[in-house]
Image 1 (cartoon, rainbow, N blue to C red):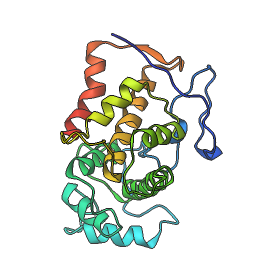
Image 2: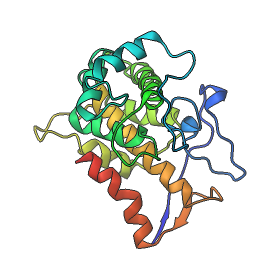
Image 3: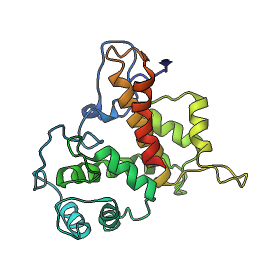
Image 4: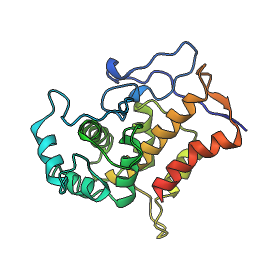
Length: 229
């Protein structure tokens, strides 16, 4: 199974620390090359402490959600923790998606430890900053043009057909113009980011195309579908 896509060249105004250079002419979404944009620690050991310099608000919100004092946040506990930090409006499926993306790859359980939660906290702040920057009319909603510009800033130039497919997923059927709240923007942005990262694994030469077996394709996509539903 072959797939090809076009990726945007270096977008303006992105901090140098988030850029990821490739040898070819194409680039993937470089905004996730490090830092707090969702790169879970690769080790299989879990720290019982937060990373040095963690903001006290992060610690307080984690402790407020960790009701059983296990040192981990499960799905309902994560929702509680985020409610202490201004993200109480996130939907259940967005919470589940965040759990899936930010959990340590070495942990067989769907839960977040101290380090993973600190990474998530940082990432949410960055996602919020992007949303507020491109919500130009300050409506608290993002239309298709604003979404396209925001994704471009993150390093993704999606084909119009894909962008339209994303927008229609949030159509409530009332025939009105579709707009995304922060929760929906975060959800679709995470899916675009996550699937792109998975695709990059199959395209080591960064050519923007890859040949996938059926098994590889299913293993790439199904986890996102399961967390999304």
